[in-house]
Every structure is written in structure tokens, then in C-alpha cells.
Length: 483
Image 1 (tube, helix red, strand yellow):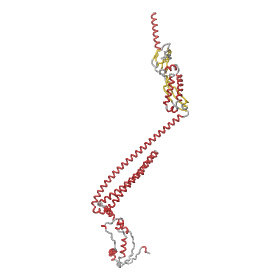
Image 2: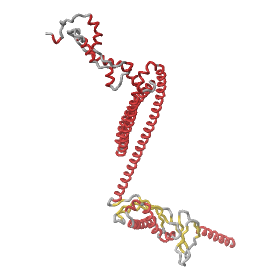
Image 3: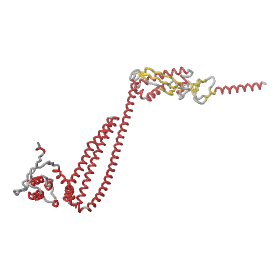
Image 4: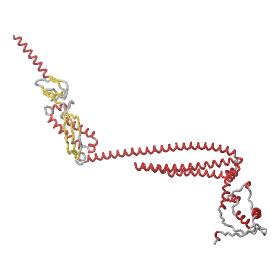
């Protein structure tokens, strides 16, 4: 019986010891730091260790000589509304911010936390950290200009993080995050800097837009200029082709006329070849002069109208945007209209002179290459018109009444009537004299100039006079003699 009791006691002691051992073996969660304090041994320097910190893993806590507590690693946020902090430029600024802080797990820093924060409430830890952050934040602001604080936020945050974390590590805390919500100053300096930056950004944007619009306008003008050049070249090629076709047709018609002229040469060539030859050189020279004048006028019009219009158009485009575009198009239309009108006039004159020269050339060829014959040919063609003009000289002379007293040539001279008619015919310009006045000579086959005599006229009028008797005074009077 005593043995059974003894065994039971031994088993109870063993079991209790085992249970007590298991109870003193502590595991450290990942979100906590296990702080073992009491008799924890000595440091490498030989000093007594105040506590032993464990993050992760487990350890055995000796009863009586050791005990333990946990430090929570959960981060906590601290709102720091710093006001009227003095900057390096002696400008007071307000910097509302929020700091996220937690107990550090770094070796050495954990011991600081175990020594200074173990057993403190979270509110106390927050107030302690807040005081440290206030002091270091003021210190950082005092070493920086307003421009650096406002524009270079990375540098400002780096300085704050470095200073604050250095001081927090002394009590076992670690700075996790810094969030600066806003920066203001009493004098409005930062706001003015912001307005200046905004205005500069707006002006830069406007300048960029204006430059892009200018580049677009210049590009459009260059494209239109290239289009005009290409269209003008195409039109010139088309006109050149049309002119060649017209020349071919004219040559074909010229050959036809040449064959017809050859067939009729015996009857008409002798008259027209002389006139053509005389006028050939004059018209050839005139043609060359007109062609040169047309080219000079075309070049003058191009230099005086088209080129200044283009230069003025480009100046106006650069000087103003929308208004320049409108003025450029008006100038472009007017310049093109003038240029086209001048080109059309020059081409028309050139065509007329070319056709006249070809006609004269064919007349000279028909006259066998003799210019004198060609001139006579053309003059003979105009003879009916010349005779008509001579006839017109006395055609419209109106003689209502004539009173004739004629002695019938009793003294051997011509009758008075014959002398009157002879004088009248002498008043008509002789054809030969008309030709000489023009610097030409009447062909011999048209007759030679003769001076009519009184005897000839008397013979021509003898038949008429023989039918009359001694002339009697006519009773009728001229109209101005009546009354």
C-alpha cells in the first residue's frame, strides 16, 4: 500500500514537473516580440543584459528567475499638425502630416523598445513618438528653403525620415511611412510660387499650341505652293502638247495649201508672190519683236505681280494667323487671275503672229521665193479696192445744173466742154502716181502712165459734139442764182 502511494506521488511529481516545463516554454507570434527579462545572462562586453528579445521562434522561461512580456508590432498612425515652423528664410510654414510608426524588429533597436516601451500603453507610446516627430520636423524645416520644401518633396521627405527615424530608434520605434498632406505659409509665398508655376505652364502650353499652329499653317502653305507648281507644270505640259498638235495640223494644212497653190500657180502666183516677199521680212521682224515683247511682258508680270504676291502672302501668314490666311488667299486669287490673263493675252498674240508669218511664208513659197513677186501679188489682190477708192473720189459730186457756152473750137483749140471734162479727169489721182506716193512702181503689164492731150480729148468728144449745134444758153440756173 505504501509502495502504491509512493509510485503515485512520484508520477504526480513527474507529471506536474512536465506540465510546468511545458507551461514555461513560450512561442513568439509573428506580430509580437517576446521580451524575456530577469536573469538573462551577460553581454559580450561583460555587462548584465537587461532583457532578451525574440522575434519568431520560441524559448524556455525559467521559473522564479525569469519572466516575459510581449511587445505588439502592429503599426500605429500619428497625426502631426505642425504650425508656424520657422524655415531657413525665416518664413513660418504650416505642415500638416501623418506618420506611421511601429516597434522595430532590428537587433539592438528591439532592446531599446524592451527597455523604454515595455509595459506602456499605446497612447503613451504615441505621445512620446509625437513629441520626437515634432522636434525633428521643426529641425528639418529650419535647415531648408521654402522652394526646396515645396518643389523638392523627395528631398524634404528624405531629410524628415532620416532625422525622425534616428531619434525614434533610440526608444525602439521605426518610421514606416510619412505623408505630407499640404504645405502653407503665413505670407502666401508658396501660393504665389504655385501661381507663378501655373502661369508659366499655361504660357508654355499656349506657346506650344501657337508654334504647332504656325507649323501647320506653314506646312499647309508649302503644300498649296507645291500643288500650284505641279498644277502649273501640268498645265504647261498640256498647253505644250496642244501647241504641238496645232503645229502639226497647221503643217498639214500648209502642205495642202501648198499643193493647191502649186495647181493654181500659173494663174495667181505671179500676182501674190511679189507682195508676200516684200512683207515677209517686215512681218518676220515684227513677229520676233512681238514674241520678245510678249516674253518680256510675261517675265515682268511674273516678277512684279506673282513673286511680290507670294512674298507678301508669306509675311502676312507669319504676322497673323486667321487674318493672314484670308489675305493670303485673296492675294493668291488676284495674282493668279492677273498671271493667267497675261499668259492668255501673250499666247493669243503669239498665235496670231505665228499664223500671219506662216501665211506670208506660204505666199512667198507660192511666188517661187521671190519677195518682189509676192508683194506684187498682194498689191494686185488689193487693186479693186484702190480703183474703188478712186471712183469714190468723184462719185458723190452732185451738179444740179450746168450752163455751157462753147465756141466749138473755132480758133483751132479744143472746145470748152472738152477742156472742162479733161480738167475734171485730171483732178483724179493717177494710179501710177498713187503707187509712187506709196513707194511702189506700177507693173508694166498694167500700163504706163500717159498724159492726155487736148487733141485726144477733142477726138473722143467729136462724135458727141457733132450731134449738137451751136450751144445755146441754158435757161435753167443754178439753185443759188434763183430769185
